[in-house]
Image (cartoon, rainbow, N blue to C red):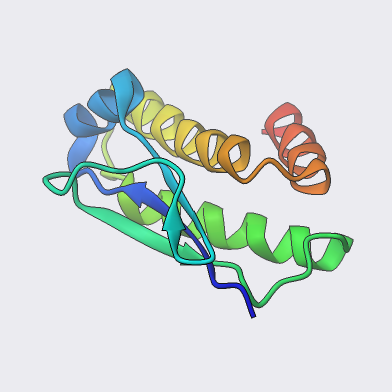
Length: 120
């Protein structure tokens, strides 16, 4: 079985969320070989999806949910009344998911992500 993982850089707080948008990378691993590296000094979260069949709607939905949870973890909500900080946190999560979806490059996952981004 091929082990597949995606790493999403971890950031803390609203300012770090903005920094993530500026250029944090996501790495995808297939068969144990990295296709793009995340620097060691950037804390990250690995999302495993080797157990999923991305050729099914169920597999794509499950992976998308995992990516959303990971993005929430790396771009945590600060529970702030500062609307610009809250917007930066949301952009951070959206960008983390979008980058992961792009790196995974699966048509079903991309379509699902596109639908979710339109809805909000």
